[in-house]
Image 1 (cartoon, each protein chain N blue to C red):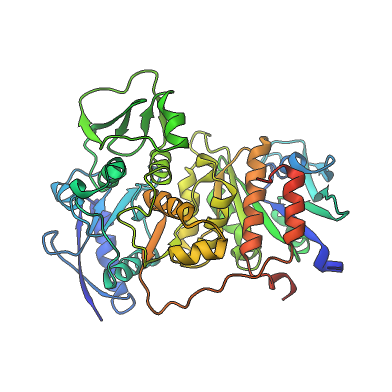
Image 2 (cartoon, each protein chain N blue to C red):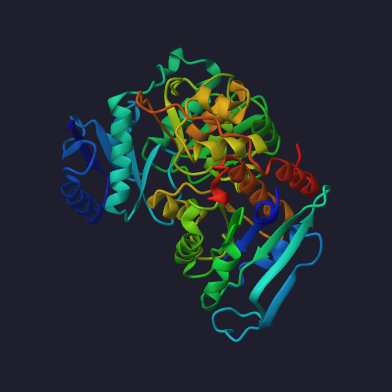
Length: 185
Length: 310
């Protein structure tokens, strides 16, 4: 394998404040390189910094190759970055925050943006399900089922490494099962 | 086109009217021609999951298909055919077509309870309970490690600290669920019924569950909630395979290179969790096992680095 063929890229995506940087940090060899800027949209999400370009982490393998981990910016105005980062990705992990009022719409939005699992395997992690008023996990599964999409949806807390590993391991199983010619098409 | 009769009970007026309008829209678009009927004559029942209609209790004792309709925000019933109200016409179409496929080539149904292997008594009683209507009763099942209790609206079950690890890790002989006037002891943990359903299938007796058909092709309607039931790598791989194709037991074992006994347990668990769609389709082409992934070595290396190797 060489060039783009040998690149193994996993993309973490989802709305602002959902924990993409945290998830990458849980498995990356080193703290992720972030391109954070001051959050000027404190009304939408109350945190001081947000990712404007991308997060980058990597996992070096024993044979000298590396797995690259990219986190997309969460805000829709950086949508163009999603296409760039999603290009030739081996798989995508979509993170959704159930406590956000438009969580179900966000699910559609991000799943659609990355090909609805038809181009690239997608795994979905839903956090903050215990938040008062948050839809149950079933509502997210139901939303996908309605659209004829059978994608893995798990309740997770990305601050817990085992939860991040569950998402990654599931993604790897999907990649193994998927059409092996997909990435070169 | 095959004509089918469907009855509606226990739904609110708005849901009933919406359903009737949708049936008209589906005329000519569904795999069968559906017409409204009474529960006595119907082949399929559409029922409010938490209503208290006698017709549902009667229906629950049969193996005829039932569509359980539940309200958004409440727990999804652990049944094969469910709809979340308010539902869309395409959702209804999907469910009705699924049912039609099953009706055309009926898959196996469970034998009468008295003929079942005693090890399946609990799972079968839970399956029956998922088809019943909620009356607020508590049901109990006894074992050598204590008694567990299930709310009949399937919103939760209650299990003691001695029984839970046994039940989730290996087969425990549990008696069939029976209504009880007792209350769950204070020390019992409240847990989701989905977990109870999953492990009663996974850790049931060896072999395919009596209500599953060896000839049928199976596919997943949705993935198991592995955030809750913590699946193994093999279960993740089986789910990945069944989320992409309908496969028979033999095909699934072949495709994933897993022992049939293990695949049977997985199918039993998915069936109990209400996420498995099964139908016999003689025209379906045999799937071809995918060639090894070209990322095979890299994926193995990544799993090793992350401590995911089994």
